[in-house]
Structure formats: structure tokens, C-alpha cells
Amino acid sequence: MVRMLRRAFGDDIRVTLLLIIIIAIAYPVVYVVSPGWGVVLGHGITWVIALIGFNLLFNYAGLLSFGHALFLGIGAYTVGFMYKYLGITNVELHLLGSILSSAVIAFIIGFVVVKYTRIFFAILMLAIAQIFWSLYYKFYWITGGTDGIKVPRFSILGISLENLDFTSYHHIYFYLVTGIALVLVYIMWRIVNSPFGLALKAIRDNETRARFIGINVYKMRLYAFIISAIYTSITGALAANHHRLVTPDIAYWTTSGKVVFAALLGGAKVFIGPVLGSLIYHIIESFAMRFIYWQLIMGFFIIIIIIVMPGGFAQLIKTSIERGSRLIRRGE
Amino acid sequence: MEILKLIDVKKYFGGVRALENITTTLEEGELVMVIGPNGAGKTTLVNVISGYIFPDGGRIIYLGEEITRHPPLKRIEKGIVRSFQLVNIFDGLTVYENLMTALFSRWKNYSKMYKLVDQYVEVSNEAENILKLFGLIDVADKNIKSISYGDRKLLDVAISFAMNPKLVMLDEPTSGVATKDKYEIMEKILEIIRKTKVTSIIIEHDMDIVFRYGGRVIVMHQGRIIADGEAEEVRRNEEVKKVLLGGVYA
Image 1 (cartoon, one colour):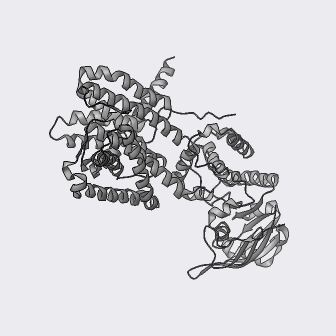
Image 2: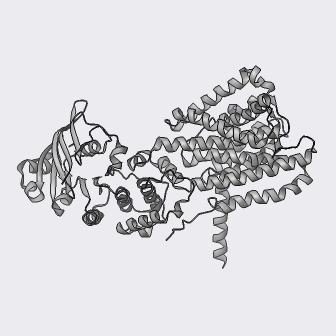
Image 3: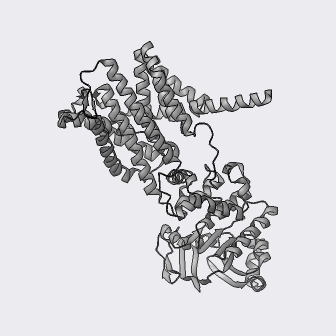
């Protein structure tokens, strides 16, 4: 008999996919009403990929990375370099390039960093990310320094979008990203619910016992690290094509902070959390950005989340559903 | 057939002699209870056999092969499995998931990513059988935090048995459990050991438990084996009486 584990809200893949599909359906309407909000949704979906990648390490492997901007930078600069030095505008090749470069770099870095956990891992990641940032910043003859690398509109399946009007171009970007996000979210859900996902959680809970039932802790962490890096770099590559400019900002520590913040905002403990987090973060950010002191507003939000709802929005919704159903049952 | 042989095994922690010239053998299918006062070296003995720490001297022979310096993982692959004195399970998982983790590890597919946990029907069935054997089937889907301490202890042992061990070492499987539940847990464990015929070393602190069930008993004191034999015969040993009943172990 196949035991069906009871999956509470948030860990059911259907809810997560449905959320993304609803956004995809609502998007044209949003765009007609306000193109600006359409762009915000595009950002939101793009960052979903990086956030679920980050959360594989954070929630499932118990490793908090304060340096995920490292992989966003690798994804973005792979696209930048591919265009600058090879003239490649093809988005499929951009993604492939980012996957390969992030996997190789994550393998080399992971080789060392996954030996560490807790604060040591967090700080080590922060330091390594800052080293990469300084390389982008200082080697301006290669990277363009703070001016960055300008990227033209991408082409897809060999078709150039250079002469398309802005709105259509943006729609194509949005649905491309949504399609990729749907596939990657589904794959990630399978990963965290596979024996590998179970082993990661076991290591997170009790490393010693995991070792003593024969789990290769180091190898599992390294795998998780590489997968997380690939996901994050895909967001980097897509964001580079979205902004059409690659600057060191994407690899700066504040970007790493954004990743952590958005994950906490959505609620890292459940699968859907980072997906919610990415969307809500970008909505709040675009509201806050209208004010001069927008960082102040974002900071205020962090404090509220940590004090009032440490489980993030996902937990808030979950609790509300539970309370609601209890009230309905009482009413019957 | 001889499964385990310790020859002059030594372990020192600074000036403390945790194990001193331990020499003993274990036959396949044998059950040995190890007893001794605090600091006698019981846990160190398990640590040394499981590879948690390496001895400072002596040799450990397992199934005719020297494993003195083998890392834990290699020993686990060969069937040497242990549990820990304090409950040592995966707190964030359900009872069923705890067991599945161990089974996936044994089946060597714990790093597989594509198929979902629930799709491994064979593994799932085995987990159910073990849970039934240990009387944990009713709490299978419960989180660790919501089950009793006694059940956690049993789950800890169940995880060790899920590894399909040839030699299992249980470090005080009843410690921390209320006295009235101790016998129940011990009887359950002994029943499973008899049923599965796995060679077992059980470390126990509680004299009543050790001598109640009979069989081979090893008494340790200050890193040495001071008695080794049938429970009744060991109980009558003068030195044992002094150590276990005297001032040290009142």
C-alpha cells in the first residue's frame, strides 16, 4: 500500500502551481490596467526560481546562505559575457550557459563551504559573494565595471525579437519566465519529496544520526548546494534579459539580503512560502519605492515579520484556513 | 561462528583510562548485556566498535576482517549499527519518514531525486512491517514531538533495525523512560532481537533489567571487564557485588 502522507497547505504542489497559473491568467488584465504592475509581476515570477532554490538549502538542508547574490551574479554575467564576447542573444543558450557555469562554480565552492554549517556557512557565503562582486566591480575592462554590460533583446528559438513593440516583447518575456518557473517549481517539489529530499531533512535535523545510518552527509549537501546554485543563476540569467543590463549590483550583498528577506516574508517552512515571498516582496517594494525612504519601509516590514509572523505569509494563511474551518465546523 | 573479536583494545582520554585491554568475543546471534557504573567505559566500548572514535591500541576483528581503523560508514555497510544513549532521531520528520530515511539509506537510493518517497512501494511496505513489529504503526504519521518518550526510544531502536544489521549495539535503550515503562520497552526489544536473531550488544545501567532477563552479561568497571558470563553466575561474583552493589552503585 502506498502511504499517502497528509500534506497540509503549502506543501501541496497543486496550490503552488495554481497560484502561478492564476497570476499568468490575471497578468494581461493587470498589464492593461497598469503596465507597471505587469512588470512587477514579471519580476515576481522571475525571482520565484531563485527563492525556491535558496529555500532548498535554507529550509530543507538547514543551511542559511547570506551570499546567494553570488549565483545571481554568475547567471547574469554569463548572459553578459555570452553576448559581449560571443554575440549570443539566444535565451535558450543563455540559460544553458548559466546552468553550466553555476554548476561548475558551485561544485568548486561547495567543495569547501558545505563542510561548514550555521553561522560559518552563512558568513563564508557572504565573503565569497563579495569577492565575486569585487571582481565584477574592479575588472572593468572585462565586466564594464559599474557601467555594466548592455544586453540587447533576447531571441527565442532563433527568432529575433529586436523589432517587436515593447508591450509584445514584455508579454513574451513574462510567459517565457512563467513557463520556466512552472517547470522548475514542479521539479523542485519532486526533489524535496524524493528520497534525496528526505535525506536532506534528516541531515538538517540530526547530522550525527544521519551519518550513522549510512548517509553521506557531505555529498548530499554538495548536491543541494549545486541545485540551489543552478536555480538561482537561472533567475540571474532571466533578470539580465529583463533589465537588459548587467551590473555588479545583482551580485552585491544587499541582493543576498533580498533573497533571505523575501524567503522569510513568504515563510520558508513550507514549500509555497518562497513563491508567495517573491510576489509579495516585489509588490511591497514597488509601493515602497515611491517614497524617498523606501529602505526604511522595507526595514519596518522585516521587523514586523520577525515579531508578529515568524512563519511568514504562508503560515498566516495556513493559520487563517485552520481557524476558518474550525469556525465553520462549529457553526454546523 | 565468531562475529566480533576485540583484542587488547585500549582508549585513553587524557589520564583517564576509558578502556583498558578489553579482550572478548561475540558469537553470531548472541545477545550480550553490558553493565557497569557511570564511567565504566560502556559507551566508549560502543563508540570504538562503531567507529565513532578510534582506539589507542588493540585490534577489532569483525567477521574475520580487521576493522580497527575503518570509518563508521564502512562499518555500517558491513552491518554494524548502533543507537545512542539519548534519543537520536530526526525531530522534524514523522515516525514513518524517520524509518523511510533509514531504509532508503540501506537500499542505497537515498540520493535519488526523481521518484517521490511514496512511489517506492517496496520500501514503504518494509517500513510498515518494521513499524508493526515495534508497535509504532498507530503513530506512523505523527510528528516526533507529539509521541511519547518511550515511543521515541523504540523508534530509535527501530531505525537501527531498519539498517538490517548483523551486529546491533543499543546504548541504554531504556534510559530516561519512566520505570514502569522500562520493562515493557525492554521486553519488546528483546522479543524483536530473538525473532530477528541479530547479534546484539545492549548497554544497560539498570541492574534489575540486566539480571531479570538472564543470558550473557559483561560487567565493566573503570575501563576493564571484571566479569563475563551467565547472568546468575555473574551476579554471584564477589567483585561484581562490590562494584554494582557497593558504594559506587548504591
